[in-house]
Amino acid sequence: MIYPATCMLVWAAALTSGLAQSPVSRKQFDVAAVKLNTSEDRHFEFHNLPGGNLTATGVTLKMLLMRAYSIQSFQVSGGPDWINIARWDIRAKTEGVDGRLPRDEFGKMLRALMEDRFQLKVHRETREMPVYALLVAKTGPKLTLHAGESKPGQLDRGWLSFNKSGTAALASELSLQMGRMVIDKTELTGDYDFELHWTPEPGQGSPEAFGLPPEPSDAPEPADTNGLTIFTALPQQLGLRLESQKGPVEILVIDHVEKASEN
Image (tube, rainbow, N blue to C red; front, side, top):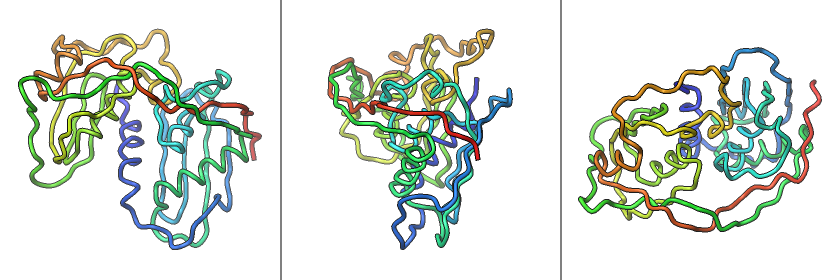
Protein backbone atom coordinates (compact mmCIF):
# COMPACT_ATOMS: atom_id res chain seq x y z
CA MET A 1 0.00 0.00 0.00
CA ILE A 2 1.25 3.49 -0.86
CA TYR A 3 1.02 6.20 1.78
CA PRO A 4 1.32 9.48 -0.18
CA ALA A 5 -0.09 11.50 2.68
CA THR A 6 2.35 9.85 5.06
CA CYS A 7 5.19 10.97 2.81
CA MET A 8 3.81 14.49 3.01
CA LEU A 9 3.72 14.28 6.81
CA VAL A 10 7.29 13.02 7.14
CA TRP A 11 8.80 15.50 4.71
CA ALA A 12 6.74 18.47 5.87
CA ALA A 13 8.21 17.88 9.33
CA ALA A 14 11.72 18.07 7.89
CA LEU A 15 10.98 21.25 5.94
CA THR A 16 9.11 23.25 8.55
CA SER A 17 12.21 24.33 10.47
CA GLY A 18 13.37 26.39 7.50
CA LEU A 19 10.09 28.24 6.96
CA ALA A 20 9.33 31.84 7.79
CA GLN A 21 9.13 32.41 11.53
CA SER A 22 6.56 34.35 13.51
CA PRO A 23 8.01 37.31 15.43
CA VAL A 24 5.77 36.55 18.39
CA SER A 25 6.23 33.44 20.52
CA ARG A 26 2.95 31.54 20.91
CA LYS A 27 1.86 29.03 23.52
CA GLN A 28 -1.41 27.81 22.07
CA PHE A 29 -3.79 28.16 19.16
CA ASP A 30 -6.34 30.94 19.56
CA VAL A 31 -9.21 28.78 18.30
CA ALA A 32 -9.35 25.00 17.93
CA ALA A 33 -12.12 22.60 16.89
CA VAL A 34 -11.74 18.84 17.35
CA LYS A 35 -14.18 16.33 15.89
CA LEU A 36 -14.23 12.52 15.79
CA ASN A 37 -13.92 11.25 12.21
CA THR A 38 -16.46 8.46 11.70
CA SER A 39 -16.04 7.95 7.95
CA GLU A 40 -14.81 4.64 6.58
CA ASP A 41 -12.34 6.47 4.34
CA ARG A 42 -8.75 5.78 5.47
CA HIS A 43 -7.51 8.99 3.87
CA PHE A 44 -5.71 11.43 6.14
CA GLU A 45 -4.07 14.83 5.89
CA PHE A 46 -1.94 16.95 8.19
CA HIS A 47 -0.96 20.52 7.30
CA ASN A 48 0.93 23.27 9.11
CA LEU A 49 -0.55 26.11 7.07
CA PRO A 50 0.54 29.72 6.53
CA GLY A 51 -0.96 32.12 9.03
CA GLY A 52 -0.25 29.81 11.96
CA ASN A 53 -3.10 27.45 11.16
CA LEU A 54 -3.46 23.69 11.47
CA THR A 55 -5.78 21.47 9.46
CA ALA A 56 -5.84 17.72 10.04
CA THR A 57 -8.23 15.08 8.72
CA GLY A 58 -8.48 11.46 9.84
CA VAL A 59 -5.43 11.58 12.13
CA THR A 60 -4.91 9.45 15.23
CA LEU A 61 -3.73 10.77 18.56
CA LYS A 62 -0.56 8.71 18.13
CA MET A 63 0.14 10.54 14.88
CA LEU A 64 -0.32 13.86 16.69
CA LEU A 65 2.09 12.73 19.39
CA MET A 66 4.67 11.77 16.79
CA ARG A 67 4.34 15.15 15.11
CA ALA A 68 4.26 17.21 18.31
CA TYR A 69 7.24 15.52 19.97
CA SER A 70 9.24 14.62 16.81
CA ILE A 71 9.33 10.94 17.75
CA GLN A 72 8.65 7.57 16.14
CA SER A 73 5.63 5.37 16.85
CA PHE A 74 7.66 2.88 18.88
CA GLN A 75 8.74 5.71 21.22
CA VAL A 76 5.16 6.09 22.51
CA SER A 77 4.39 3.90 25.53
CA GLY A 78 1.08 3.33 27.34
CA GLY A 79 -2.35 4.72 26.67
CA PRO A 80 -5.58 2.99 25.61
CA ASP A 81 -5.96 1.22 22.27
CA TRP A 82 -8.06 4.02 20.80
CA ILE A 83 -5.03 6.34 20.48
CA ASN A 84 -3.94 4.09 17.58
CA ILE A 85 -7.39 3.62 16.03
CA ALA A 86 -9.76 6.55 16.61
CA ARG A 87 -9.35 9.24 13.96
CA TRP A 88 -9.89 12.96 14.42
CA ASP A 89 -10.48 16.07 12.34
CA ILE A 90 -8.86 19.22 13.71
CA ARG A 91 -9.03 22.85 12.66
CA ALA A 92 -6.95 25.31 14.67
CA LYS A 93 -6.20 28.99 14.03
CA THR A 94 -3.71 31.53 15.29
CA GLU A 95 -4.07 35.29 14.94
CA GLY A 96 -1.34 37.65 13.77
CA VAL A 97 1.09 35.16 12.23
CA ASP A 98 2.83 35.59 8.88
CA GLY A 99 3.99 32.44 7.14
CA ARG A 100 4.10 29.04 8.78
CA LEU A 101 4.95 28.58 12.43
CA PRO A 102 8.49 27.25 13.05
CA ARG A 103 8.62 23.53 13.71
CA ASP A 104 9.50 23.83 17.42
CA GLU A 105 6.83 26.42 18.11
CA PHE A 106 4.22 24.50 16.15
CA GLY A 107 5.07 21.38 18.17
CA LYS A 108 4.62 23.23 21.47
CA MET A 109 1.22 24.53 20.40
CA LEU A 110 0.13 21.08 19.25
CA ARG A 111 1.18 19.67 22.63
CA ALA A 112 -0.85 22.37 24.37
CA LEU A 113 -3.88 21.49 22.24
CA MET A 114 -3.64 17.82 23.22
CA GLU A 115 -3.23 18.71 26.89
CA ASP A 116 -6.35 20.87 26.73
CA ARG A 117 -8.65 18.82 24.51
CA PHE A 118 -7.47 15.26 25.28
CA GLN A 119 -6.43 15.91 28.91
CA LEU A 120 -3.05 14.50 27.94
CA LYS A 121 -0.39 14.00 30.59
CA VAL A 122 2.97 12.45 29.70
CA HIS A 123 6.50 12.07 30.96
CA ARG A 124 9.77 11.09 29.32
CA GLU A 125 12.00 8.14 30.13
CA THR A 126 15.23 6.85 28.68
CA ARG A 127 15.35 3.09 28.20
CA GLU A 128 18.07 0.76 27.01
CA MET A 129 16.60 -0.88 23.90
CA PRO A 130 17.65 -2.72 20.75
CA VAL A 131 18.69 -0.25 18.05
CA TYR A 132 20.35 -0.40 14.65
CA ALA A 133 23.51 1.49 13.80
CA LEU A 134 23.70 2.74 10.20
CA LEU A 135 27.31 2.18 9.12
CA VAL A 136 29.39 2.31 5.94
CA ALA A 137 29.76 -1.15 4.39
CA LYS A 138 33.17 -2.69 3.72
CA THR A 139 32.83 -1.84 0.03
CA GLY A 140 32.51 1.87 0.86
CA PRO A 141 29.55 4.19 0.28
CA LYS A 142 27.72 4.15 -3.06
CA LEU A 143 25.96 7.49 -2.70
CA THR A 144 25.62 10.10 -5.44
CA LEU A 145 26.34 13.68 -4.40
CA HIS A 146 23.39 15.97 -5.05
CA ALA A 147 23.38 17.98 -8.26
CA GLY A 148 20.53 19.98 -9.75
CA GLU A 149 17.21 20.98 -8.27
CA SER A 150 15.78 19.67 -5.01
CA LYS A 151 12.65 17.52 -5.12
CA PRO A 152 10.39 16.16 -2.38
CA GLY A 153 11.27 12.73 -1.04
CA GLN A 154 9.01 9.77 -1.68
CA LEU A 155 8.28 6.67 0.35
CA ASP A 156 6.42 3.41 -0.15
CA ARG A 157 6.70 -0.04 1.38
CA GLY A 158 9.93 -1.44 -0.03
CA TRP A 159 11.03 1.76 -1.74
CA LEU A 160 12.26 5.19 -0.80
CA SER A 161 13.78 8.04 -2.77
CA PHE A 162 15.84 10.92 -1.37
CA ASN A 163 16.95 14.13 -3.04
CA LYS A 164 19.56 16.46 -1.53
CA SER A 165 19.46 14.61 1.74
CA GLY A 166 21.94 13.26 4.28
CA THR A 167 22.38 9.91 5.95
CA ALA A 168 20.73 11.20 9.15
CA ALA A 169 17.47 11.60 7.22
CA LEU A 170 17.93 8.10 5.81
CA ALA A 171 18.38 6.74 9.34
CA SER A 172 15.15 8.44 10.41
CA GLU A 173 13.19 6.90 7.53
CA LEU A 174 14.71 3.49 8.18
CA SER A 175 13.53 3.80 11.78
CA LEU A 176 9.98 4.05 10.44
CA GLN A 177 10.47 0.94 8.33
CA MET A 178 12.24 -1.16 10.95
CA GLY A 179 10.16 -0.23 14.00
CA ARG A 180 13.42 0.34 15.86
CA MET A 181 15.65 3.36 16.32
CA VAL A 182 18.29 3.61 13.59
CA ILE A 183 21.28 5.77 14.57
CA ASP A 184 23.44 7.35 11.89
CA LYS A 185 27.07 6.35 12.55
CA THR A 186 28.32 6.70 8.97
CA GLU A 187 30.16 10.00 9.62
CA LEU A 188 29.12 11.01 6.09
CA THR A 189 28.27 14.71 5.86
CA GLY A 190 27.30 15.31 2.21
CA ASP A 191 23.94 15.91 0.57
CA TYR A 192 23.03 12.96 -1.65
CA ASP A 193 20.47 11.76 -4.19
CA PHE A 194 19.65 8.08 -3.85
CA GLU A 195 17.00 5.39 -4.04
CA LEU A 196 16.62 2.15 -2.13
CA HIS A 197 14.50 -0.84 -3.18
CA TRP A 198 13.88 -3.92 -1.06
CA THR A 199 11.21 -6.52 -0.25
CA PRO A 200 9.57 -5.69 3.10
CA GLU A 201 9.36 -8.41 5.68
CA PRO A 202 6.11 -8.79 7.67
CA GLY A 203 5.61 -5.75 9.87
CA GLN A 204 8.12 -3.52 8.10
CA GLY A 205 6.64 -0.23 6.96
CA SER A 206 3.24 -1.07 8.44
CA PRO A 207 0.61 1.68 8.87
CA GLU A 208 1.13 1.52 12.64
CA ALA A 209 4.70 2.76 12.16
CA PHE A 210 3.25 6.01 10.82
CA GLY A 211 0.67 6.33 13.59
CA LEU A 212 -2.10 5.03 11.33
CA PRO A 213 -4.78 2.46 12.19
CA PRO A 214 -3.87 -1.13 11.24
CA GLU A 215 -4.69 -2.30 7.72
CA PRO A 216 -7.82 -4.43 7.24
CA SER A 217 -7.13 -8.14 7.59
CA ASP A 218 -7.84 -8.67 3.90
CA ALA A 219 -5.39 -5.98 2.70
CA PRO A 220 -3.02 -7.30 0.00
CA GLU A 221 0.63 -7.88 0.79
CA PRO A 222 3.17 -5.70 -1.06
CA ALA A 223 4.39 -7.10 -4.36
CA ASP A 224 7.79 -8.79 -4.42
CA THR A 225 10.02 -6.45 -6.45
CA ASN A 226 13.46 -8.02 -6.21
CA GLY A 227 13.52 -10.37 -3.25
CA LEU A 228 16.20 -8.40 -1.39
CA THR A 229 15.82 -7.82 2.33
CA ILE A 230 16.65 -4.36 3.56
CA PHE A 231 19.84 -5.78 5.11
CA THR A 232 21.00 -6.99 1.69
CA ALA A 233 19.73 -4.03 -0.32
CA LEU A 234 21.53 -1.38 1.74
CA PRO A 235 25.08 -2.69 1.07
CA GLN A 236 24.38 -3.52 -2.57
CA GLN A 237 22.64 -0.31 -3.53
CA LEU A 238 24.00 2.33 -1.15
CA GLY A 239 27.18 0.84 0.32
CA LEU A 240 25.72 1.07 3.82
CA ARG A 241 24.72 -1.54 6.38
CA LEU A 242 22.68 -2.01 9.53
CA GLU A 243 24.21 -3.48 12.65
CA SER A 244 22.09 -4.56 15.61
CA GLN A 245 23.18 -2.92 18.86
CA LYS A 246 21.72 -1.70 22.14
CA GLY A 247 21.48 1.91 23.11
CA PRO A 248 19.49 4.54 25.02
CA VAL A 249 16.14 5.49 23.46
CA GLU A 250 13.93 8.28 24.73
CA ILE A 251 10.37 7.09 25.39
CA LEU A 252 7.25 9.21 25.81
CA VAL A 253 5.03 7.57 28.45
CA ILE A 254 1.32 8.41 28.49
CA ASP A 255 0.16 8.88 32.09
CA HIS A 256 -3.39 10.02 31.31
CA VAL A 257 -5.50 10.72 28.22
CA GLU A 258 -9.21 11.06 27.42
CA LYS A 259 -11.17 11.19 24.19
CA ALA A 260 -11.79 14.79 23.20
CA SER A 261 -15.31 16.14 23.57
CA GLU A 262 -16.49 17.47 20.23
CA ASN A 263 -17.12 21.18 19.67
